[in-house]
Length: 117
Length: 109
Image (tube, rainbow over all chains, first blue to last red; front, side, top):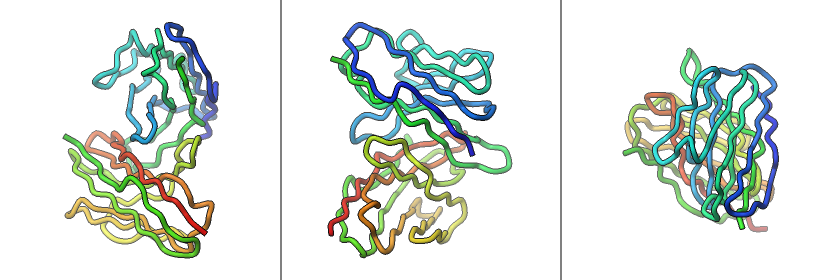
């Protein structure tokens, strides 16, 4: 299992500004993931944060809008840049054990509820 | 494309039984997960099925039929605290999790 501390838990931001969300894991993990969950919708993967290399972004998400840092195996940040009201959402970081001999569940941070006004 | 379907909302009575269905079409299959998400909180793991059949864990059971691309989550002896959204997620051929939109379960006294 993994315990993930994510902050801030919520924020209200002005359009055009940027917000950085932090995730700290209590153990070393190879892969960390950033999701967005808009009200009433499924979790959408933004990107995979890789330690020592650039993040891998999913279709529809770009580094200029969502820059990610992964300085070590226990920490990652996601920045939501030049925000607009459409960025209002819940952002979640996650660690998952993908592949290997056992496919285990995902563990999530507490989530960041972002409102852009 | 990849697709996970589950009902948007269901209502049930305290003490009763409810079944939440999930159908999926994905590129490959490496297991199906059910998560519970209370409003304003992160999802928490409930169950994992990779082989056909029923997995029972206390009041919750999860069923999988890989040939039908179908799963259900069965909740027994419903309690008010079971009011939450229930998310179905499938691990595809790349072990990427594909998420359903979730089923909001409303429990009435």
